[in-house]
Length: 257
Image (cartoon, rainbow, N blue to C red; front, side, top):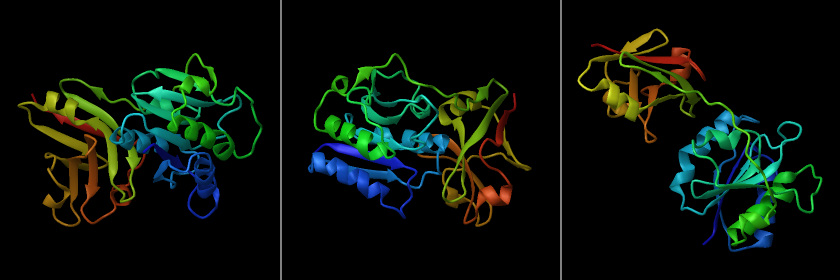
């Protein structure tokens, strides 16, 4: 069964989500529409990119991902469809898709370049038909005119050497846990046979836990999460509030020679 995932900043209190789904199903009622989230902070590209990057590879290759976040974008931003890492993505060329993978798209087209329409609801009138056609087997090249490239934004990159990894918090999740861009692979390479300490806010810990429940309630934990990124939290507490940290706050790991 064809799959379309749906990610948006629409929220749940209006008709927008249902209207987009209805448009897709009116074209092909056999499509399976899977909601990723509709609680993305309004127009927050970094939030949307983090959520999409975290989950899109868990779906079968060939899945179509409809992304309706900051859809209006900047003047001149096009509506596009791309093939990237074996998946298809539909949305606005606002820089979001450049944040979800280091790879370049295999192909990208302007989906509003053939029989262009003006609409205040492009998610329904432009994105939904394109997603339904792709999921129904239509070729990406048939959806619009090719584009030379997509817009890219610069995400936060960690800095690492033999003595230190310097990273940043890239997401505060629903629980108030702090997710960093420090990845386990880099840590494992640099920490081999070394003692280390993790520094954030006014805190310092010398151990990364296997599980968050290995510390007492109210204590700080550090773990590598399911995506392989260092995560900081407080067992049964809200780390972002209690530690006074948020998006872009620094996190440092120092290694002893």
